[in-house]
Image (tube, rainbow, N blue to C red; front, side):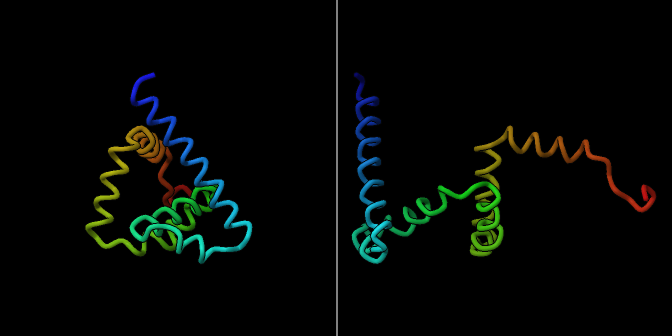
Length: 110
């Protein structure tokens, strides 16, 4: 087994153990204890990822549009747009093509 496979397997087992412990705390309604037990440098981002993960696309869009985007300054928003275009180029190409193919709605069409 290569080192990468061993590390991947180790990370997966640690993640499963961490999620199991988190679930125990959540089910016991020990949120403050859960947050206090997390290292400060990772807790906020980690918990944000954990709580956003189960949301479906519509719910996630609502959170992002209504809350997260409002927290971004201009520079952060630009960096996020660049990241999304680089990370998901096919998705945005399809979206652009779809909007270009849709007929424009004008007063003359009514």
